Image 1 (cartoon, rainbow, N blue to C red):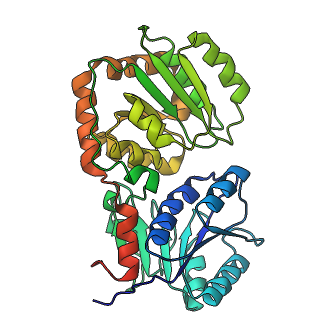
Image 2 (tube, helix red, strand yellow):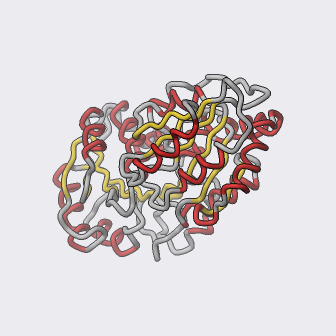
Image 3 (cartoon, rainbow, N blue to C red):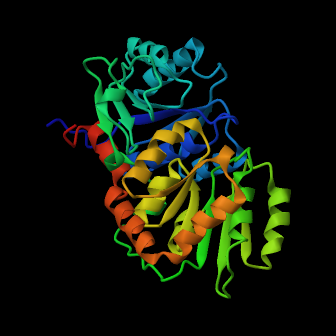
Length: 353
């Protein structure tokens, strides 16, 4: 088997536009960390990069290059391909606005390409590898793919960052009653589902030891409103403006309410019993499958949340220790945290595809 002791440069083209959020970048950061750990260099190309994210990338020794062309356009592909060729780099692309034509342009330019995907949104796939880390990933999502395209499918390849993987082997205890609850719905939450969830939690019977941590992403526009609602908790609610220690929070709490994106794989890794809200259409398939396999309790689409119904569902999780234990065990069985390292091994030719 061909190996590469020192990997070539890696360039990541991720869509971090305000309307998309930072989720694509954060999962690509896990891949960047694994590549750096293997001895390579990483740069990231983005049309927009919020200050907090820029600081994180710089701290991780990831270079940043601005792409001025419209996201997913031919000009974008030409710029990215030229840069990849100059750097003799393997290219990773992640974002829903990069389609089949974008892949074709990159491959025609001679670029080796890993395309990160969730639901088979492109018209066709010509990348060297397609990575879909979701529980619903299947070859049937990619009927229109080139003969050379290899599929990396399922949670075996879930991209967890280094700060999670370092806790491999940690064991969770499941208390008779969940006293500590985490709420985290991603970077923006434009519909303010966080407030609805918090209001439902405040309706639950109170114990002296109960605590809640609500993480509002850096792009969340509802901070003032959330502060007002949090004060109704009489000191039981801690409101956090983003966080760089999600692993610490996930270890500390007994139960989480999350969005249906990459946070699901982080919670599963920690065996954290979770209720999941679908905040974007692209999260629907994955959340449904997680519910069907007994990994999470789905609360449905964010637009349909009702305070009284939520309070009932969340109280069930709070008091039902056997249910939380089952969710915890199935999550741990689903995600082992080594997905980023596996992907890097495939790209370097060190693991059978």
